[in-house]
Length: 66
Image (cartoon, rainbow, N blue to C red; front, top):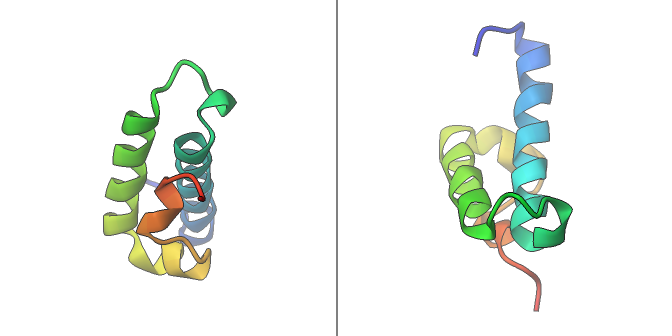
């Protein structure tokens, strides 16, 4: 991603929150299956662990709360 560091951080955090929300609540985006959202979220989580830690997101954030 070619962006200034501060803009890049914002874009990554938005992506992490979006995929987490779709994975937890599939009705947010009916066109995207939750399994795809989880896969995208987990890949971003592995690639940007510091950003996820700052947002307090974990692997469990990709699954609905019980």
